[in-house]
Image (tube, rainbow, N blue to C red; front, side):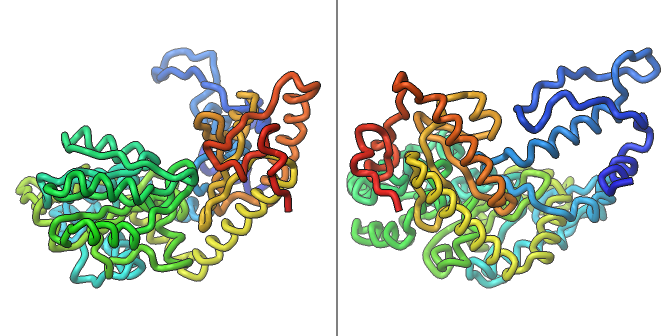
Length: 449
């Protein structure tokens, strides 16, 4: 019996020996299962609960090799080791640095994770506060709320390529906001930031700095933004900087130290399920301890102080994060960073050689390319698309073999889409730069290595 069969038997001991055939294969997108809740004891002519779950598991395993468009690291092997924890309800309600009156929490693991990130982002243990969130959006909501509480009259500045949760925060908190233009690569337009800061010089500034934009992977330069604030006459008590580093917050420290609390920044957030990887969405939010009193509320019912957004918090995710960080270590993460950067450049070079429009930002693992003409191709490879662009995010679990399969299939499909000259590849010069566009208009200037 194979290890996979043994695992299936352990997870689903009552499943029929003759497993039903999986309807979906890795070749196509997963179909809706059209499920309904079953009532125990009533006659059921369909598959058993265990059979449905086994088929679902098999489908997911097949689709792993076609997951290229979204920032999730699905390459981790410790789920079996940590699976016994699922028999307990673990709730890290309230402040992670204060113990609750119940024992079913993992705050000791959580603090270990927070200490690790505090060291990574250069802030002393007694100077920071933070918590493990339910994801990057919660981290952004928390960081921007801190800025709003510290500077109630502040205006939120965010580039148009910022994550949508930043603008959601502005609506939720009814904050005045300014959308800053971006350059063609997705980085903040600092001249536009300067103009709008000067226009609103009588009000404090709350600035969202994106360390790796959602679609193009561009990195806003914290140092240039700080210099711009200084030049516009903003003292440190009149601005707050929140760093949204959802994907790249675990990458940039191993390349340079652009994220550091030695600079006058207020908060940093990352998504734990992205570059590091975790079965459940999660994130880490770190801020300065001196700021948190503005949000802290004493809650007698839970015998704790709470300054979080969500209140009840998943107690499993800190353990998964702790285990992953301990298993990999900084050396392992550094290897992952190098591997992803190398593979991203490999993909970009291969696409460029094939005459396909493509762009790759410096220090990025997001390869932006022309949008495939066929929607089924987009769904098969689970690509994210905006206008005439698509992107591949080269995560640690993405192999050269997967990239080769993607490139080979894309090249073959393009021959069909654009044969006989009846259709042409889209022009994306305005979206990724004329020098990166290989459309019929720009290809005369398109440089192949």
